[in-house]
Amino acid sequence: MLFDDASYSSRKANRHESACHACRRAKPRLLTYLATTALIGCCMVAPVLADADHSTQSLALEVIVKFSDNSGPGRLVGRIIKEGPNNPSNFAELEAPLRASTGLMLTPISVTSGRELIVGIAEKPLLEQLQEFLAKSPALVGTELIELHNENPRLAKTMLLVRFPASSDEALQLRNAQAQGGNHSSIQGLATSLSAGSGVPVQGVARGHEELALTLDRYKVLEEVVQQLNDMDAVDYAQPNSTVQFMK
Image 1: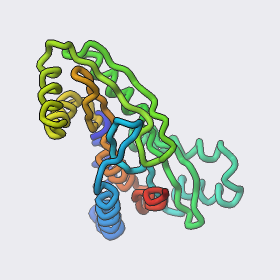
Image 2 (image 1 turned 30 degrees about the vertical axis):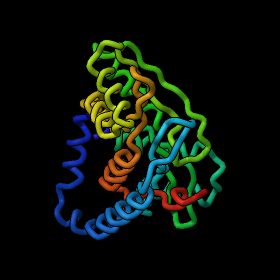
Image 3 (image 1 turned 90 degrees about the vertical axis):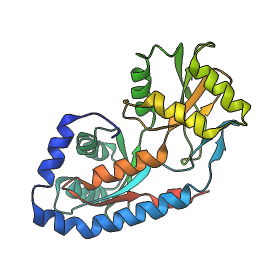
């Protein structure tokens, strides 16, 4: 989970209490799962280089959401299409149900002619959540959020740099991994262990002998958000935004 919210489990249980409702939604959700798997899989063939030396996944944090036409958000999308997409207050009204249902900072970007809503997933708040979590860790001597000036929407725009004491086991693990040619599995294992319990999935890259750069595991974030959006009663389907994934 990307967050720890007990009320989410209760809402989810209520949404699935009707077997007929679940059966009615089975087909679109299956199609969404297949589309998500195929799309993310092809976008994850290889990491790309960002900020000269920071390796990250090439995957845009955007999803397409289709609300039921007779739902509150669906009617609002219809109104946006009718009145024109230039009124920011209309999009602001859509943020509330999205954020209430997922607990995440989701921002409506635009609408399509097919009454679909394009939604962006803000990465910085999730890394801020991780930074707050790591502030309690005695294994670290400091953390720093760093803006990455990437124009490409598929690349990370923020990373969290964490620093270990030079004499720590973590620093030794980083040095050993780098001595082995940048042992990715060892470095990623350290990143995963460090973020465990935060609810924020990350990718880790060594920066020097005592620093670890953390960015969101964009694959897992996108997968989780798509699943949570599909759990909303008002949503017909949610899927990754395939258009932006293949833009140059």
